[in-house]
Length: 472
Image (cartoon, rainbow, N blue to C red):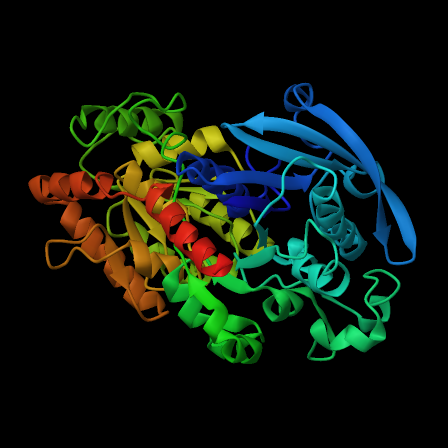
């Protein structure tokens, strides 16, 4: 079985969020299970030069983009025993950032068409193209419209994975032919609610559709979560499934993580206390083990539950906790967190930006990890927190519901709440703080959390079963 994983970002080449983690880890896990998995992605100018130096130029081709043809250089690289194809076009990808450009529609139309053209010239014949998010949503559409007669492509199946349904690739209908190269007669494939919706096109044309947790697969059939796509998803629910993501247990391993202050494991947790002490020193917080250190590593945006946090953060601070927040996002929440830092100079710290080294130190040094998301397709942070023994507090939604169970009955791995309500969240934080006071019971909970298996193994096996189903 051969799978080509098409993605707009992948670790270690280009990263803006969780998709890069998945794109870097899942193909590696598939290869360990004897699946011929390779990755194809754009060659951005932001890729580190050290990685570019180890790439090999294969060839160049001409790619149709509506009425014009564009150069595409094909480079090959290797990372984690996985072969990557990186597609070069400086006009589209020498931008300084991955997304957010005025012509993103054309950039990823080029990439989607290029993926199919590249398959014709490389020494790899995939049985399945695994597409991810709206940037690759045109691949199943183009495959249906233009490549049915191509010998190397006519039997290829497509799987489209929705990582976050909020971002759908919506554009005006006026660019249907001029940018996407789709004739008016086929407009219905990508038209939805009076605009071009590329994710809708992928749901329509892909042979199977998946999303990143079973709970999220159910939730996106509901208008509250679907951002308008619930009707088409209900019509195509027979092809929809949910598979929870995993985490890279090599990158996230407290036993030999070079970013943290001291190694530790579920069998020997002595280093956990050292990490907390050193983190407190780094953040200029009072060094004490008597109070729990609560952490958030998150984008500061509303769907991460920041409105709940904003409503009750004063109350939470009065529970007698220390707290550190690492992230960036909306001005409203950044400025609020800054005000809280000034209001509680002895026990609250805010660090803005994306700082991977500090994130690892926070996971290792914190006692409690707060993640009260309004919606969360899968979430990786709660699984990383478990790995490092920072007990998650989560709202029961999406992948949070599938990976964290409440420890109130003595057998869970965190603390959960259902209602999207600030008081309910605050009460759940209070329960966790009270639990921290029982040192013996807390150590049992931390050990149980660290022993949870959220590696890519089970997830990769689930994808393999789905691939086999596709090929039948």
